[in-house]
Image 1 (tube, rainbow, N blue to C red):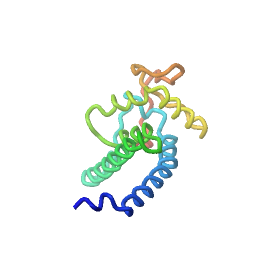
Image 2: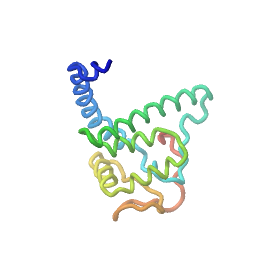
Image 3: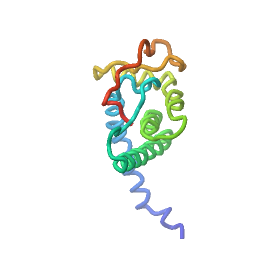
Image 4: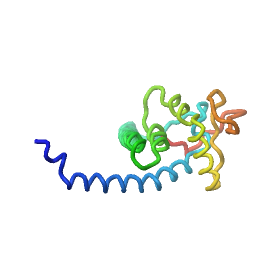
Length: 159
């Protein structure tokens, strides 16, 4: 019954899947992180995706984005022990799914110094401004904190 688990074809497909996932994460994760709006992690800025669209379209879109986010989270967890960018992949997955306490968990992950420094260096390399983080989170020295009024509503704000 469990013979398929020990087959060489399963091992081959898992190897190929691991290589494809690793290569995909090296391309997709930086691409997503560079395109985040600077105020994405600022809690004072609302994130309303597909606002003003038909409710059925909004529900379908949110369902698809949540499914994609769960896949990114699972891939990120796997990349903690496999080759890949596990923490960054999980952060992107978390930014896609909707659940209570999402922003607090994102803030906790982005407050890990190596994660914040990696994202900031990547954004700087591609000419993007640093992320603005709401002041009450614990960020490493030199982080950019949100100051002044809430930024204007931006259509580029994602999920």
